[in-house]
Image (cartoon, rainbow, N blue to C red; front, side, top):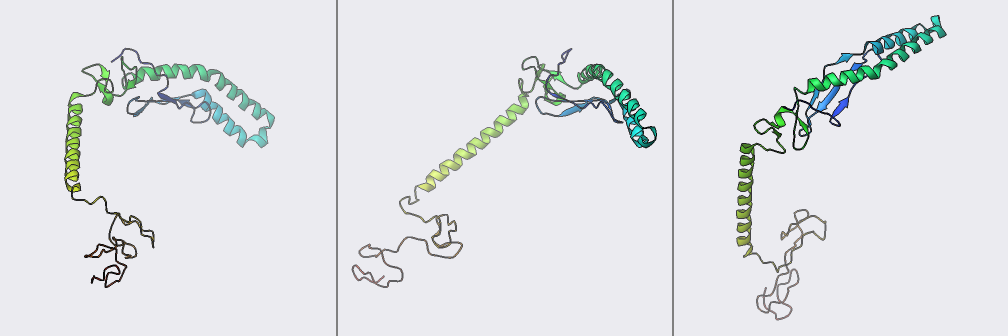
Length: 219
């Protein structure tokens, strides 16, 4: 693990300057899997006191008048003056604490959690993937590719008996249902197949014709 870790954009500042919940806390996240870790909450006493004073002064406003507002404003000003310095110190402590939860990859400079770290190589799993996991994934890809190729070959063989010259109605002209090339519409039952041809002269026969209008042959 690196002796020093820098966090530039993979953290979230959760600090609160004023109110009863005022304090310092930071959330760091793994640059590879985005899992998060939060530093322990550190209360900001000046901000909490300002919040308590403000809450109390608002409740007693009708009694103390403008004097109460002045005390509250002074407390807010005192809290604001020390917040920045204390926040910076808290952030430094949080980073020191985060070093036990993250590793900095010397190749890509990303800060990753323990699950995304290859300790044997001293690199993150993006730069140095786990060999066993990569081998297993490669085997699965090979299996999928082979099955896909065999299915493709089988489709080519079956395609040899498919009459590609026969037009097929893919949408029913009556109800607009998708037919997928069926002889009859699955929505309304309308006949969608090719027009019947005369067995003698091969002319198209009208629907319902008992004899061929071209040669007179019985259908």
